Length: 197
Image 1 (cartoon, one colour):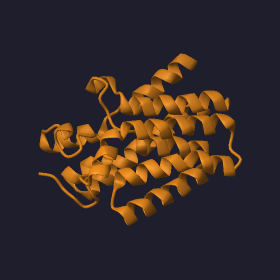
Image 2 (cartoon, helix red, strand yellow; image 1 turned 90 degrees about the vertical axis):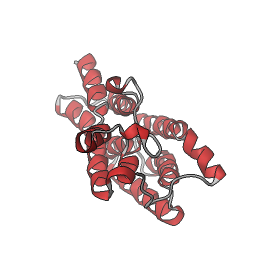
Image 3 (spheres, helix red, strand yellow; image 1 turned 60 degrees about the vertical axis):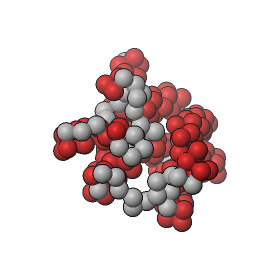
Image 4 (cartoon, one colour; image 1 turned 45 degrees about the vertical axis):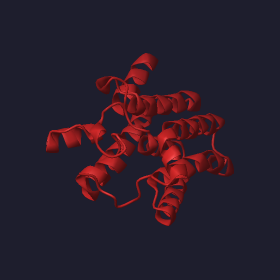
């Protein structure tokens, strides 16, 4: 059962909705546009806000669904549930279908955190929105908000396993944003509302 759930979490996480939307709607590879990422932000630049919302919702849902299925099948161990969540995000970031070149895992991480502690996810989402609106950089909002989640979980008295997992996801998010950090420092990072051809 444990092996099955781990594989299922990876498969769910690795479903590349952003890639599929652009491929089906335009017959093109999203990775050739904008930031080269398959996530909702880059889909928005190419396809518009509606499709960004759809992809973002899907990516959030698959992270939450991986843990929800495990719980429905009787898993109660916070350690294993936290591990399942991490695997789902790794599936998004390194999908076998795209030669392990996937997204940055922000939306999927928030779906996982929602299953850890809904309030922490909501507060993290508010932080993301505020930073994004003030700076107009989605990448900055993503890094700041996910980095805040471990502290929110501590303040909310969450389980240690969820705090450790969320810390790992925050570090992973920052590592996946290395190119964005360089562009932020150079002043060439894409801002909210920018579209690409």
